[in-house]
Image (cartoon, rainbow, N blue to C red):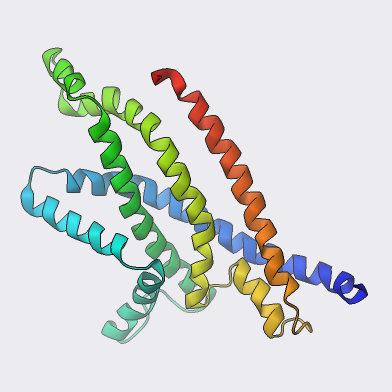
Length: 228
């Protein structure tokens, strides 16, 4: 017990550094995937059949394969083809590769949620907008979008909470996020070796962060109750 108390400040400091990397990956993914997902939705719903077909195939492939494999492909494949890594070296390069892979993966998932939200809005509202002389873009942004947002909050919340835990997959390309930091003390780090409790302690970080997000997303959902 005394040994654990001596190790605790060292472990917490290391986990805080790893968790900061986890937070960076989480927010980078959200910032990139939320708008990209909407663009992919427009592509999959396009009346231009080749674009719609290609977009749907890409979404199908991304949703049908493990994120871990996608991380490995994004990180290693360009270097194998071009003969040199395109992401740069070190932790920064690994972070960029992970962020791009996560953004693309979650954008495809978000696109299906967007599509379901858009298609759930009654067709009569679009017809009413056309009768009033509104353009299709005006109908989407002024009529459909607000109602779509209300409908997609619950499934989006689930995906966002899942993203918190999925960030741990980035360690497959040696990105030093919080799980990597916790596992390092099991293998040997900063004079500590064979300690498994730091790895379990990382769960506390995930629980607290997921709890905060759950509360915030719940409040957002209540604020959008005006369509009920």
